[in-house]
Every structure is written in structure tokens, then in C-alpha cells.
Length: 400
Ligand SMILES: *Cc1c(COP(=O)(O)O)cnc(C)c1O
Image (cartoon, rainbow, N blue to C red; front, side, top):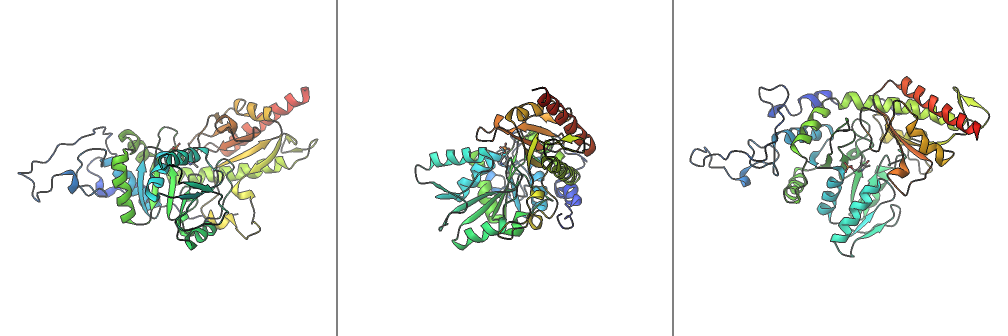
């Protein structure tokens, strides 16, 4: 079990953007791309052009590719809760691409994880010619390498040792980026273990309602933030105005959603693991053994042979997305469609639980692997739903 949970600061989520608040309690939905110029003849300080706008604390806006009010507010809250300087993008992969453009690595150390990030790296490689090399996470590093570490890992939900890879890449003067999408605040804080940059698909837990695409990079200094913003203006990959409104709305309840999802997922992972360890011919809690063969989850990982204890990294609770392995691919194909509360769909992090035979989205996946994203429903109802579905699969099996 992890140590005492860290508290995600609800006050920061509700009031972290208060310096931008006007008389409206909730910000208006604004879709304007352009803003009225000041009259140079009437400007007190003579500052009227785009170049005079403070991009982090804009007193006014000029064009929404530079800044607009609601995404600025969302970035201030994201900065507060991630212990750094946060910048938003149009999607998680837009953030990934921007990180590559920022670090310009010649070599990237990476293994497994979300397949989309590998495809983004392929696009980057194409643009850089043949100079970019990919190496395994555990290869020897050299100066200038970028270590790309995803933890907990998609789709299994198992953790990797951030501090270990931070030390390893820093020894040669390289940088560590951590894709922490599966571990939003308050579950883990990668900067505390040596990360240089933290990546989130904001589409997942920050958005939390399966209704917006967004990406987030968090860096440690204002100088890095300014460089990323300068690039974003000309990459044009900022979040849409409407999305920024949905994101800000969602952030207000992050501290209520994520700990709840984490707690329910932990209960379910432990329960499913007991079923997976039940032999054929026996039952556990009414579910026959032999259908489910494996459960992956950070809480089940234990301490590895190098002494890495995931509970020390996930101090705020275990991940709410994880995977199970069914004994036959047909079970994995059928399971998502015989559940009542889990919605058969890709993605994760929303208030509704989702279930996916992972091979449907990632062709490299084991056909027996099913990924579960746990929402905020009553955990006993989710358990009951899984129980009835396993019994259905078992009765199909009995007929065969
Ligand atoms: C979904 C996801 C991404 C990509 O995010 P999008 O918002 O879909 O572009 C990146 N990394 C991980 C771990 C993800 O789950």
C-alpha cells in the first residue's frame, strides 16, 4: 500500500486563476480569435503591439494564436498543481511533438508505452532526416540523449523507476521527459524524482469527461516556458478556445475525481488479481477460475530486484487505468460488449469507466489483453458488472 496520500490542493484548482477573474463567477465561453487594438494615441505606456504582450500574464489579448483568457487561466492552475510552468497544446501528441522540437534530440531512449508517441517520434525523425536514432531505455546513453519515459505505462499500468532513468541520463548531460498521463496529480509528481519535463495528455484525467482534446507540458523554469510558447505561436498547435473552457471547468474537480478513480481501480485490481490466481474448477467471490489469467497494476508490481518500490513514486495513490489478460482472445473480444456500465471505447481518464480489447487500437497488443479505465461510478456496481460478465463468459465456455 502507498504511504499516506498527498493532498491535491483543491484551493489551487478553484482559485489558482483568480487574478484573471472579473465579475463573472464562471468565465464566459469566448470563441473570438482576434481582439480590438488599443489606440496608440490613447495608450498610457505606448505598448500596443503583439510584441509587447506578456504571454504568461497577459493584461490584454491580440490574437488567440498568442494568448486568450481561458487557456491562460487553465495554464496558471496547471502550473500550480504540477509544481512547474505548464503550457497547453491541442492534444497530447501535439505536446509530444513540441517537446521533440524543443529538445531536438539526436538519440531517443524509449521502450514500449503509448503507440501514438512512437508515431510522433517517427514524424519527427522524418523531418530530421536519418540523423535520429532510437535506443532502448536500458542501453548505454551518451551526451545529448533524450530519455522518454512513460510511467505508469500504457496499457498495462505498471510503473517504471523515474529516479533511476533521471540519474542515468543526467550523468551524460541528457534530459528526461516523463509521460505522466496515467499518473496525474495527486498520484505522482515526476519532478520530485528528477524529471526535466512532464508530459500529459490533457484529454485523459485533466479533461476527465471524454469531451476535449488537450496536451500539457510542464517545465521547471520560466525561461523554458517562454521558449515553448514562442514555438507554439508558430507551430500553431495551441488548444482551441472551446476546449480551454472545458478544460478549466474540468480542472475544478480534479481532486475529487482522480483519488476516487484511483481508490476504485485499486480495489478492482486486487479483486481481479485474486480471480486470476484461482485455478480452473474453483471460484473466487462467485467467479470461476480459468477465464482471467493475469492482472497488471502498479499495486501488484512489488519491489523489483533493483529495489524500486512503486509505492514510493506513486505517493498519492495507484493508477486508475490498467490491464487484464484473458485466457482466450475470444473472451477479450466479447468482454467489452457484455458489460453494462463499462463503455466499450478507447481512451481513458473520464468519469465513465471504459473497456477496450487493446488490439482494436494498438495492433502490437496481445489479443487477450483488455484495458480498463475506471471512472467515478460506485465500485461495487463495477465489480458486480464484471462478475456477471465473467459468469456469462464461463457459461459460454461450459457450452463449448
Ligand atoms: C492518450 C495518450 C497520449 C496522446 O494524447 P492525445 O491527447 O490523444 O493526443 C500520450 N500518451 C499517453 C500515455 C496517452 O495515454
